[in-house]
Image (tube, rainbow over all chains, first blue to last red; front, side, top):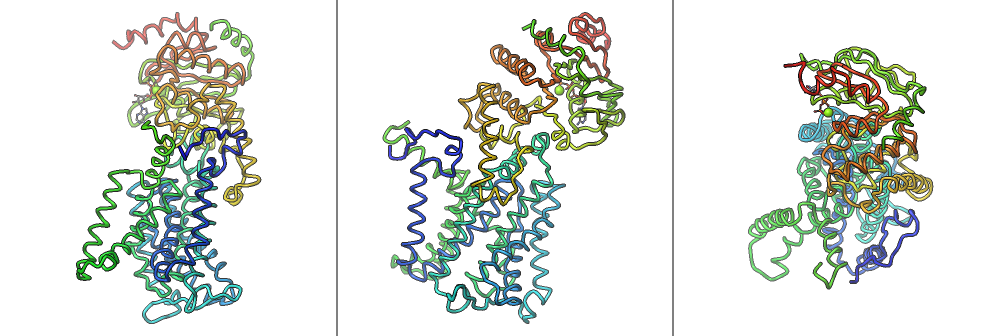
Amino acid sequence: MFYREAGQFKTSYAADQAIFPILQDRLFVIAVLAVAYLVIPFISTPYFLVTIMIPSLIFCIAALGLNVLTGYAGQLSLGTGGFMAVGAYATFKMTTMFPELNIVIVFLLSGVFAAAVGVLFGLPSLRIKGFYLAVATLAAQFFLIWLFNRVGWFSNYDPSGTISMPPRDVFGIRVVGSGAAPEVRYLMVLTLVVVFCLLVKNLVRSRMGRTWMAVRDMDIAAEIIGIRLMWAKLSAFAISSYLCGVAGGLYFAVYLRTVETIAFDVVLSFVVLFMIIVGGLGSVLGSILGAFFITAIPVILTRAPHDLGIPISVDMAQHLEVIIFGSLIIFFLIVEPHGLARLWQIAKEKLRRWPFPY
Amino acid sequence: MRAPATEAANATETGKTVLSAENISLTFGGLKALRDVSFDVKKGEIRAIIGPNGAGKTSMLNCINGFYHPQEGTITFKGVARRRARPDRIARQGIARTFQNVALFKGMSTLDNIMTGRLTKMHTNFLLQAIYWGPNQREEIAHREVCERIIDFLEIEHIRNTPVGRLPYGLQKRVELARALAMEPDLLLLDEPMAGMNLEEKQDMCRFILDTNHQLGTTIVLIEHDMGVVMDLSDRVAVLDYGNLIADGRPDDVQSDQRVIDAYLGVSHQ
Ligand SMILES: Nc1ncnc2c1ncn2[C@@H]1O[C@H](COP(=O)(O)OP(=O)(O)OP(=O)(O)O)[C@@H](O)[C@H]1O
Ligand SMILES: [Mg+2]
């Protein structure tokens, strides 16, 4: 009843192809953006921003990246952590070599290094598919972590291999490093997420996206309509790794600030994979929902007993968190194997028909 | 339906050869799928390939569009002889096809499936696509218009936004034809476009094939088991049996050829 498209006739292909063709969707997105920019930074505690919003937003970019590769182009990858590490170390090396370089530009450039590495490790995808490809990307994951551990140059010869983000200003405002306000860090990451979501959404509804989906759905048929499989797969690896690289740079510089390679180990690859599975494969919205779900739920669960005044030990709380978190994931996958994004879709269909049952 | 087919036959009698396959031999291990087969396709005609199951009809199409590489023989398309070309290269040269068992992109809508047929004709780079607004949008709209004309032509307006996985088989075959037409091919290969259809769907499909041939001037190679359809639609018929070309000519001549009758009755192999 409230959500309906009746009466909204498209009179041009441009209107029909618009990013949010339905008025209510447009209003909803505007409302979410307004809250994200104008409300959250002013009412949130620094704790909420730092432990939930900032990491969730950073993982949005990583999940978006993996979704391009796995959800849209159908290439399974377990190398996300490795590609994020490339972004992190590229950020560190660039900003220590050229301290004057604008840190936002450093982030954007870090992705380029990750993209190059991604293309390199994407080469096996020309020969192998599915689980075999996943194993090949796993090799990339282990190799990259080993490399950053082994070669001192990457960590500027720090004895323990740790890298720390030095403070950097943009237009006189401290955005990263010690002294950067949570609100500023939040707004910077939020803006990057909005921009990347928009760019990726545009890509996937254009030629590039259809090329990827064609390869995902049936590579033989993709070839007979003239798609060069090599180009299609490697472009997916490049853009996916680019996004993962930028996310890695932010994960290091804005969220953790001091990292060892262990932060980017294979667990991280799986975490991002869970995000897109729970959120929805082949969906930009799914990447966002998945990133927030997987990042925020554990934090909320950990704090819940304390906030509710239930006296249980820290150990017990941790075990409970894992159990509940795992059950939630299984529950959602059973209820809707196509992810949270699909649940949202279904909710909208219900709203459209409301108050009638069908 | 008969009259237009004969008319077309007369009109294309003098047509230039678009594709010629010479002495094609294809073996899988010990199995000879094609033995020394030669045949040609003239511009503007509907060329049928018939034969019993396993005769090598699909293999022939696979050779033409680069899936299989025959051990011997040459294929010449638009005057250029080729050996071992990749399917995507051949698609770009102007050959489109449909498959015996539908090969659509299941996760995409009808419209998006048809739009994939335009991919090789779109040129904005990925940065412009990411920005969308501007050149990319203009290109999207221009190609959308072409696809909408094809959608009208094949009468599938009502399923424009339906995911193709949900469509009944007959409509899926039609969407696959639409995708092939979106490529604006010079040569269209149809592998049993009417298999598994009911009478009404078959009649529609026949009409679409004839309209494609007449209105768009597309040259068509057609594999079909329904003899009535073949006789009505095609200008010339090639008959394969156990990988051999046993007859080639006008439908009436082929139909009365003793070897063809034997092949279909299975006489020669008993
Ligand atoms: N990729 C392959 N590997 C091995 N054998 C093959 C392959 N493709 C086809 N064949 C064999 O080649 C022969 C011809 O097959 P083809 O598919 O061309 O027949 P067809 O005339 O299209 O038959 P149908 O009417 O059943 O579609 C068959 O014996 C088949 O088993
Ligand atoms: Mg066949």
